[in-house]
Length: 290
Length: 275
Image 1 (cartoon, chains in turn orange, purple):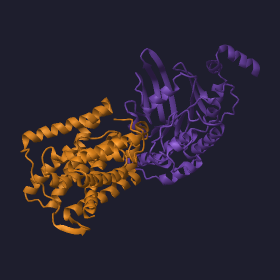
Image 2 (cartoon, helix red, strand yellow; image 1 turned 45 degrees about the horizontal axis):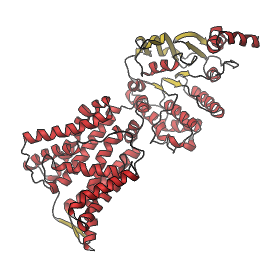
Image 3 (spheres, helix red, strand yellow; image 1 turned 60 degrees about the vertical axis):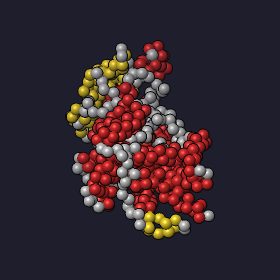
């Protein structure tokens, strides 16, 4: 029973982070209609900046802010200068460009800095409190609280704010959006800034576990992608639900089946979902785009 | 198409301002070897409703696409209140106050009808901010009133796919109206509407005309009766050229207009039955 509870509790803490990675993808998909494959690499650059600041004795909270800000800025630059302008050649081109940008970033990192994995600081490894048999650290609790807070904020943003509504409209019907004076470029650019910043937040939570190398945080992308396939590409709530499902089920598989079966289990889950509901748990419409 | 022009044309109200509005001169638009518009001029003065009619393929919608910035014509000049806007694309043009609707309504499908209408309010607010105008009326309250006048309050919280076609069309017009544009371009607002919806549309347009006395409106429409009942002036296009232009009663009596709609022999026949 203890093992089961452990699986659930740690599954929830991990699941929230997966879900947040998914929401970063959802944010960009909502305005642009494709997924950014550069999220992990955007986070990596920001984390390297963060680790440089940290070794220069910048305190952790300020370093975290630097990482998130840098990730938002990098996201905005990549989206605004490279990917969004490429959309005129088709959404597929733009989506593929995000892969190219990601690989380019990895290449630059590999030659300019030491690519050996480095330890990344966490928000605090002290025990915060116990949930059943599991002792949650300060970092775990911070991650959970920040994730939940961001979820609520983003859901409200998309639902209630004028900018959030405009972002939904811009992707929905680009023609209508243009004629009612919405600037698709500005809205998409904003979604890239948001998406980048969210990748930075996720990076802060996963880097202590995975350590930091040019490719280590790309695990983010895998789980984020799994999350949006399961939950629906355009649904914030779907990402939250499916993040938790993936977090808990992968833990259960690792504990009761075999640790090596985790990826297998996750892909079975994804394929099953694609067969039954191709647009995900809470996706709004069938995927007809990239 | 109703060519028996048995309408009671409205009389032209006095022009509030003849200098402003949207003016297009010498617009020529070719697609390959096909000339869709041949040196067409159109003046939409502030405060005036102008009907743009013509047989199928005469270039009405092409003209609207030129005015709203979708097409860039090979020749011609377009000005808004005397300022050239010919190089502006639809987005900037709408932010200057030229707003249009489409024959097939273009609504954001995941937004409710009310949220769609609010996009028009956003456009108005951004224009007010840019022009540093503090509007006397609350745009959201105006939008609520417009939704009420247009009679789709019941569908306000539904997404467009759950609403009848007529309601979607009317919602798109409402969205354009609440943006409080200087120039409103309506592309076949009555097409696809039932008789009942048509009547409601005409009533709603009349309310809008009274509420926004300085708005220039261009109405492209097949239903000549509808055009004549809301537009004091009419311009007729045929084969991409201006065939006639003037007050609606003059234009609709014009022999060449009747011929363009019915063909020569039928026009003669039509004359025979009415005289």
